[in-house]
Image 1 (tube, helix red, strand yellow):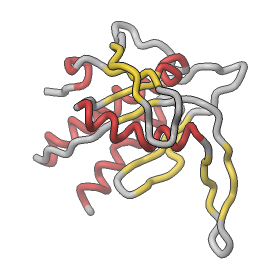
Image 2 (tube, helix red, strand yellow):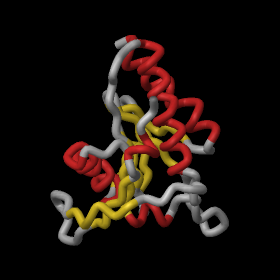
Image 3 (spheres, rainbow, N blue to C red):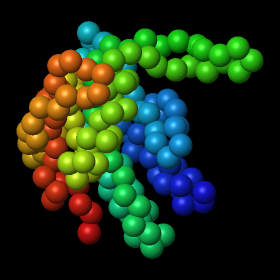
Length: 160
């Protein structure tokens, strides 16, 4: 648990620096979001993902472990609601969240540390010198239409 705790704590600084919010921890996963509006139609999610990758790489070296991780970036509408009876919790619902949850498995199958859907990429502020490559269409369980999935060449995500 100490390693997992340090792993999740390492997310905090890059997320704060890039204006994101860690909405929820789900086991050893974190859901990080940016609110997109007409006045702010893009978020620094890709830059944040690269900063998280670097921070977790440093943590792995510091602790002498080889924890793997995956980051999936997707964008779309969500429903936010307070749920629960005795213990209220703010949570997200909708196709965007369901797709995001399944994209972790896609990243694992493709051997990618960071993947983005085309919608996720369109919602990201550009990062100089970073051009995701098309990995192909993927039809997720529960969806009829495929999502276009992009990834980053290994030299952008591998840390020495």
